[in-house]
Length: 163
Image 1 (tube, one colour):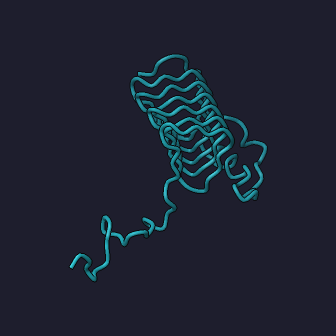
Image 2 (tube, helix red, strand yellow):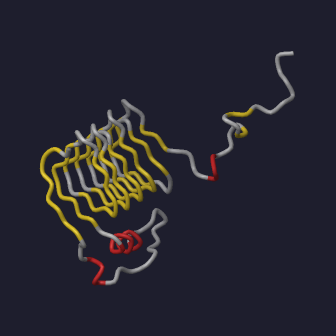
Image 3 (cartoon, one colour):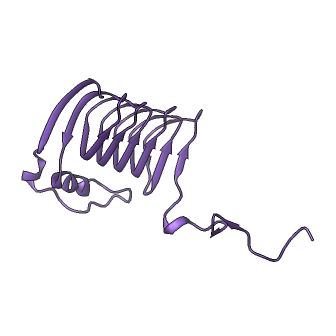
């Protein structure tokens, strides 16, 4: 009477099943402070405080978050405070972002109200080669970087408020 024989489902997926074969997002919740480097093969969301370098597939820094350290990721969304550099294929600075540090990117979006005190360096194929040559979480290196790919294609100094 209280239990039925049917399977419980959540949002159309069997309970406990991962969505589309992807790992679940790792979360540093508000109020949590972490000191040390973070390495994840998947997605990471930070709503608390991190002091250390971060390497992951996709990173979201929430509006209440503060990060001090360098970031290497495929995709980065910053809505909070970051003191450190970013190397990513795609970077988005939300309207509440406050970034002090340089950003190396393939694509970037900056919403009105975001504050950036640093330098933007746009790279196309060169960034892919640099990121491929960085050690992976398992310690392996995908490939070596050809010397000519170290040169930036586009560089801008940005000081102050975007918008």
